[in-house]
Image (tube, rainbow, N blue to C red; front, side):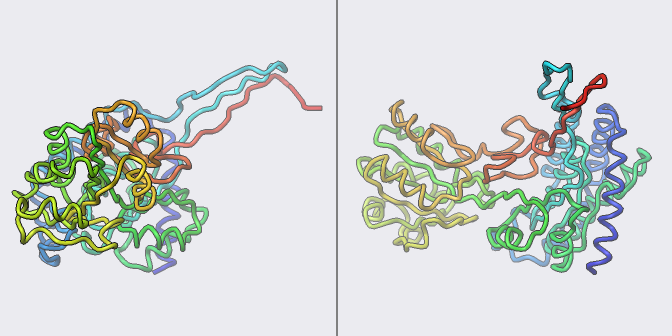
Length: 417
């Protein structure tokens, strides 16, 4: 298994070199064709996806991530079109200057090369990653999870058909076997894979960080807070909380912990009332529990345990913590955040500035839902992941994050003494 994967990755490495000969118009045309082919194959994709869904319990938090239907497939195709319409990020002159000795320097954007992505139960990632990598001049080594293997293979077959029609090598997109041994091979593919990006659970990210011998960009789990400040507008806060928690519970930008200023405990029932329609289970500390008792369905209201804070729920569950002012809110976030997305709801401009300047996260919000942490929403087209680290890329990773740069130096016989 190990050697088979490494041999395939060697072919992907060689295929990546052909991407340097493609014009932006060519990559855009291939992606436009891919979008059309995905829509045309919607029935086949749904059939493959149904095989994956049949093996997963419906109450599994990953079920919603795995599910594909006609609207979601169309959205995937539309995201490919958006990527095709974005300016190609390769060959851009980022900086240039002429030195006193006459040497002319250009700092020019270049592809990373071969980008490996390890992901779990989101088959749309197969297409998103390929589209972004291809537009940015990279080959893609795709390592999906076994729970989405039928869906991933269906998408990869369409990608390969599209590459065939364009006269390009299929090895530009390589779907690894859905086995642990394949992950090990990818993480040890020194010289064949330029960077690895894990997308999924904290356990997956920790495993990749521990065992990788190739560079890694972490796209961490989302442990997301929204802090309702003493000056918050109640209606605005209720709307933001409802959207952040219930829009799509299985995604990393979904709300996990509501921080409520003690001065606003009387408004907590109004803030949480919209959640009851979705049967959101609330784990509340003592003060919040007392404020909600008699106002929120008893069957959905439970006392919080310490482990309910700093927990990514990925379901219709949420914790509530009472804080005495913004300093305690900031301290709680610092202790429990995964540095993904954090929000404040407030009308006090000074408090907003303190929050936005102090919170250490890839995306920080004032008076808006954390559901917007997404490459498409940020105008990047599809995203390859949301980086929670600080080196190379942070936040939603679009095309620019899939490039590096090199220095191009032109002279006329200069030598150095």
